[in-house]
Length: 276
Length: 124
Image (cartoon, rainbow over all chains, first blue to last red; front, side, top):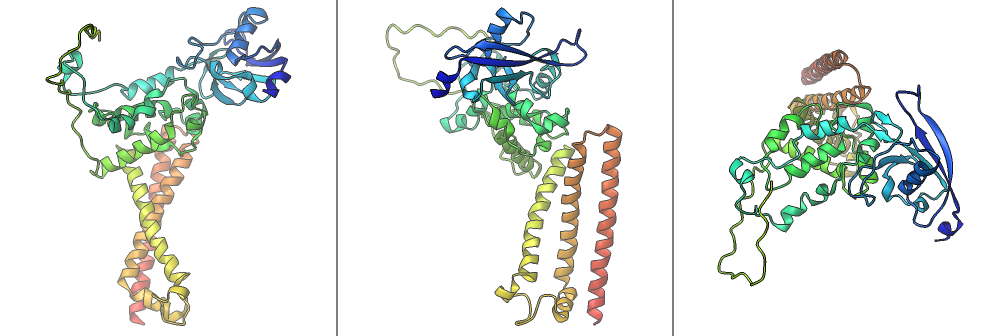
């Protein structure tokens, strides 16, 4: 609270780069009056409204949900909307695009490579019963314990902060990276899924989890509290057990039987029909 | 599939090294306390103890297995470090071949040395 009272002015040092006009990135410095509750995103918006109309970045939800505003703020990958100026411990805010990605412009990283790797690992439920997937007759049965095996990994918002912090991804562009690997594990660990063998064709190769040193930076910077380093180690264990033929094969969860003998209470409307 | 296989062997080799290095530590450095493997009151590197171990087929086999596992574990780790320098595909293949040749060569030399000392000790 004392730091908040003492803060009256914020110095923004923003890295600017327009590939069409600039030979190399440059730093711009602007001063803004501090307002209580100001986030880094608030500051960038104020800059755009006043002194830097051409400043480019991605953002959408303003509440740490969409994952658009991942940036390199004071030496650490963070969400600009989720970062209070006061929590930085200084009135100097250095903002750059996420490292380990090419820059499209100013603070906009090119995330195509990350999403290509994500797509290659098939981050969706794969099952043999295609009819049930397209025309569901009910819910798949899953216990709370089974849910807990993957729940934290499903909180990922694909912001790319883990990729920007990963020292392996920094040197080896073929490495899939923490986000795609975590999402692959999220589905491998889901009892409703039966796609381990399909994903293994990618995971068992050079782009798989083998290059991870367990530096743990991905888990440290994740704004959603996901632990990608843990997911990668769990995935390595699954793949080693699979190679040794010791991995426990499982049947994908079946459709739960509907409760019988329970009368529906009056006044409860029907559930809407599935749209996907 | 290849990287899955190599990593599994890397982990397996690490476990074997852990057991055999533990055995080495027990025999060479802790046996003064344990008094299990060497003659009472003698040092692990005394001539009589060295010859006794060299005559043992068990020790000859453990030397060869430990050598093989340590070479694989170490050279695979070195390969990973070198690959992080992001070499091209041709250089990667060349490094893999070179490390394999070095590993097989050193393993052959070490195996020959273990076998030769085993045969020599049995004539003493």
